[in-house]
View (tube, rainbow, N blue to C red):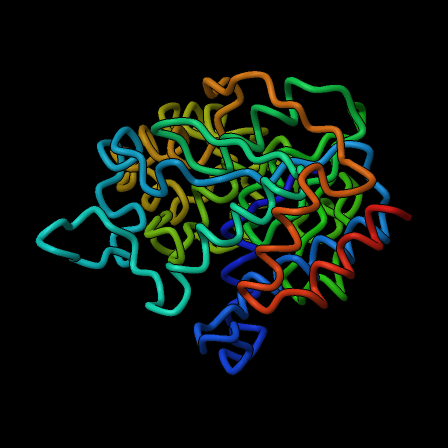
Length: 300
């Protein structure tokens, strides 16, 4: 099981009231929510291995060089540094606490310099044996779904309690495309949440239809170059006008499969590896109930 950690702790922060605090009054809602999510996932799916995948670089320079608008709207100029992601003031201090708790419990984490959590997930899902469950609220990871290797996405769009289990038939039913076409589909459609403009006038249905006819973006652009008769003139004009964007955006949308990640010891323990440290952290941050639920899930 591969967790998109930032996706989950942001969801936890907004889903659990900030009135949930440590004994000193510090908000601890994101940590408690994240631990409860892990408890639910472990109890329901009983993974033998689990990794919380991290954003070492939430907006890699190599992606920005290709599409300058990539995640630009999420920038928060902090101390004159326009490269910092805008994170709620009450969430940022909770992330180190969460990582410390995970380390004491013995839950593996992984990241890679200059790569996002998506790329870490893509690399580990490709590198390791299946089956693999990817837990995320990011639709871009639908491109990793692979029934032959047993890779599916547990999508948290409606919360962990109402996970959507997406295999290839589910992706086809949802979008009318194969998982392998999802990156090209997202490139065409665009994604405002990532600052990807897409092709003006090409929405989900049109993008799916074009890929259904031409297979992939390369085939579609070959049809544009050839002014293929089967390609409606209105679509030809839109695609032709977006050539510059379409030449670079796929490399931004595609999840890396070869990020430089050291070997990860990812076996899920059946009890905390450092119980004294876990107990101390639980007391310090008022996490006794959440930690207790996690210990019970691990033991089960």
